[in-house]
Structures are given as C-alpha cells and as structure tokens.
Length: 111
Length: 111
Image (tube, rainbow over all chains, first blue to last red; front, side, top):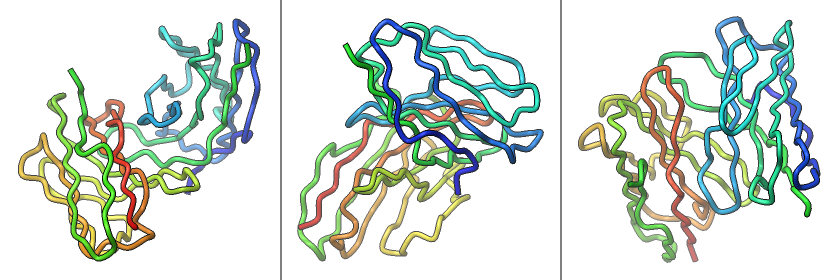
C-alpha cells in the first residue's frame, strides 16, 4: 500500500505556480520522497526526488519539511502541458525496490 | 532514441488466447519491471527482474509469465486471456539507487 496521502485533484491557472502537497507521516529515515507524473495516455515520468534537503531541477522544486512528514512539489510556472496526475512516493534508496503508486493528485492547468 | 520501448502499443484479442508483450531498454540498467494500470487508473507492480532473475512477483496469476532472455529485455507472456486482463501494461527499468524509467505502455483489450 502507498504510504502517502495526496489531495485527489487541484486546479492551477496557467503561468502561476502549482504547489502540490503530500503527507508521508510514517516515512522511515532511509526512505526518499519521489515525485512522478503521468500525462494522459503516457508512461509515468520522473520529476524529482529528495531525502531531507530541498531540491530543485529544471522541472520543479521539492520542499521537504524538517520532520520529513510532508513535502510540497512546486511547478514554478505551470503550463497546459503540466496537466497530469502527480504521484508522491516514498521509497528506500538503493536496492531494486519498485515504486508503489497511490492515487495521486490530478492537476488541471487552466488557461 | 527511446530508452524503454514496448511492443505492441495496442493489442485487441479474444478471451482464451495467448499473447506476449515485449520490452527492451537501452539504458544499460540491471533491473526491469512490469506494472499494470487497470480501468480505475491504479498502477500496480507485477514483476521485478534483476540481471535476468525474478526478485518480485506480486501475487500475479500464473497465467502471466515474464521472461528475461538478457538484462536488456523483459517480455510478458499471458496465457488464457480473461476479460479482467484488459489494462495498460507498463514496462520500466532502473539501475540500483537511480530513478525508474517507464515505457509508453501497451494497451491490451480482451473481448
């Protein structure tokens, strides 16, 4: 079972920042927070991951609270192409642990 | 170049038939996976292989038989297809520690 809780859906105006929250209150010390998204009719796409420090890449920023019990994915300037289901996943680093997907958040970017 | 490729993309077949879905990755990864996404859009791990050896089998019916001829390929063979097997099947690969990359999916419809 997924160890994360996300709102089922969110809307965001095009050009604005999209902030997607995730709760993972039972996260273990050796588990990372991963974010993936699935655009309609495509395979899941990796976005970003982190352990305890905030992370940023060309797609998004990941803010993890100090107690690591929650995190927020930030898409700084959402576009229509960012409309997708976003999955927050906790996963042990290393080994061959598969990703366990929850229900995710359906983000709709509106023009 | 497609990193994880699956064939066929679409497959319509009758109940009781046997069919295969092929997957190849050109990333040099050691681990490959099969995921199933049903009509309710839940993504679930089915199998995981590391260096051609099965390491995870998530209580999948034994009508499903993955085969890994080498570490770049993980094919999924399904015997005696049932209506409930209709779904999108995603192949994925990863290297230890690194992120998991997904193919574009194979849409299976059993009629």
